[in-house]
Length: 285
Image (tube, rainbow, N blue to C red; front, side):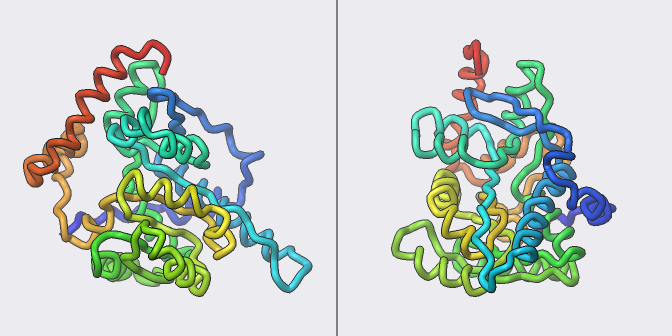
């Protein structure tokens, strides 16, 4: 079974900061890793950022004079790891999706290490932990979540697990779907009907980043305030794939645990030494 996240006073923290607009909030520091932006936000700051985006939409809808409030923009969050960074070096569409995103956070320990080499401090905020903590806050604040992606049945199972952990969590929907054009209309119809506040997309990278970036306008019109690509997070939460022990995560060895359990990933893992070498050789990342 996936690890539970320790209960904190996160909901109260977000309640106190969520209504503060970005003009009042301190400016975000942005690190650069091989030319890509990474925002220096820790978990609580990321949750507060999400809260502000949802509150902005609610305020705009509440103040609209027309019966049909104007469409509000979608805000995209990218969870960067070394594999995504390296893919973006040769994939212009992925690079464009990342650089146009509203928030890029350090999912991988390698990204944190790369920034530290340049004297820039980043906190690691993984997609799976962000989903867990968002669900915790959502249960307290009434946000509606939609889980999209993974193998058939996994999103639904992950949703059930989160609702058991966080009583009161409103799950607008859970659906495997897919990034293919043939699945698009069905997905968008579901979202427009259920109108979730936050959409978590588990198509894997680079498909999830491209998919969100390419549909920002229509997703915003469907009522989605924030969309986040979370890779294999649903598999972890559903217990379909075990997560590395906490001590391995703390020392940055989660990648090794996954490789030992899933040896077929070795080709993808080749991106890690390539990333390290690129960071060492890069004079202006």
